[in-house]
Structures are given as C-alpha cells and as structure tokens.
Length: 300
Image 1 (cartoon, rainbow, N blue to C red):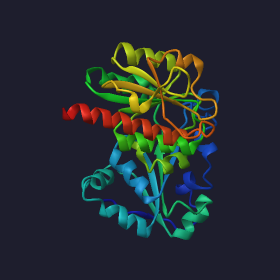
Image 2: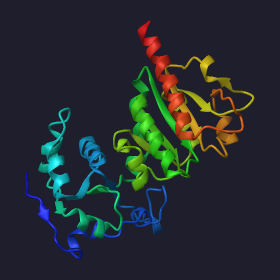
Image 3: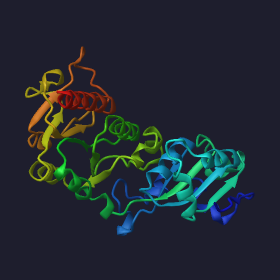
Image 4: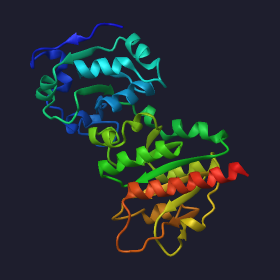
C-alpha cells in the first residue's frame, strides 16, 4: 500500500478539490442533468464520513480521484471490515492518492465541520452510465424484481432516504426523472448512508418511455403509489413478481400523465387524510409490502 501524503498547509494545491466545498460548484450548475453549462460534463462529487467512504470504496462502481482524511480515519479505513477484507487492498492498488492532515486542517480547508475527518472526491458517472437502459437490460431475464421510479422529488433528504430504502428492501434500482434532486449531493449521499453507491440508478429524460420499456421488455407491472379514487389500499393489493413502483413528491404527487400509464394505483391507509406521508417514508412502506409479498410467494 502506497504511503499517504501528509498535508500541512491550507494552501497546498493538491487539496484544491476540497477547498470551501459547495454542492453548486461540484454540480457545475447542471442540476441533476449529467451535463453542466454549455454541455460540459459535471466532474466530481464529494463523499463525507468514514462509513460512507467505506461504501464508496467497497462498491467499486465509481472512480475515486482522491481521499482527504485525518490520521485517525486513515488508520481506521485501512483496517477494513470483516465482510469486505479485500476492498482496501484493491483500493490501494488503484494508485488513488490519499492526503492526510489534522482534523482542524480538514475543517479549515473544507469550510465545514460535519465530515467527521473523512472526505473523498469521486468522479461522476458519465451520461451514458446513467442511461436507464443499462439498469433495465439485466431485468429482462429476472423472474422477480422491483424498481423505483421517482418523479419530481426535489428535496435532497428524501432522495437520500429513497436510496437507503431501496438498498434495505432489495430494490433492483432507482430511476429518477430529470426534475429530481441530485443523488450525488453531499447531503443526499450522507442521508443514504452511502447506499447511493450500492444501488444502480439512472436518469430518465422521459419517464413515460422508461415505463414502456419496463412493461414491454421487462414484463413489469407499473404501480403508482398515490391517493385517488382509483387506488386500492396496499394491504389488499397482491404485488406482481415483476413491478416498477412510481413515487412522487408529497405536495404535487404523481403527475396525471404518469398516473394514466399505471397498471395499478395503490395507497397507504392513514388516519388523517390531510397529513400525507413523507415520500421517503411512503417508499419504505411500499417496498416493505412488496418484499413481504414476494417472500410469502417464495415460501409457498
């Protein structure tokens, strides 16, 4: 394993990527789109905290430009975890530079404190890598799967929560429409506990076209989670083995155009109709019911 590079100066050019980190700079002004201003590719995302960086390293799905960590966190990261003992040797073999400094130096350079002494600069996926077709192609031969389709969810906490739920309940992936918040925002990554690196995801320029592919090529039933007259309560709904669940922001809900494409509409019974569930919480409930249904079928 190559030796870490010790940083002692705030002005060291090698840690320029970590100086006064702002999500707007990392996005390149492009929002969720994989392209920034004038069609230039967005380049970096920033992961923070030791558990999140562990998942980034273990996923092996993302190129890592560098790490900037305290001495303590570097020693902890090097120790690895029992269930993934080969992740750090593979990371070390990649030649990725590791910059090490004091915790105070990290805080002064980054301009904030809650990274816990561990930061990583990763390379954003290319537009081709975020094409939903890459996620959907392997599903054509699967007998059971569930994907999440997310429409209009702009709150980063909700996006992070949705990815964490998708990982916990075994969703095959998450497909976002282009109006959603960026899953590679620092806070979205943090709320997801780094599971944005484990769960396959893509950006759909047209959610309706993605729905057609899911139905016609993957044999998926399209299930919208929404409260309306057509809805069946979730406790009475038999989930099909292959499905795509659509969720939307709690204020505006799922658009009428997307609802019209759904094979089924389900709702979660609530004591108060005037207090809708947070979309991340709702996604957890629906995914739990899907998993329970699939597990029950497999047990027969």
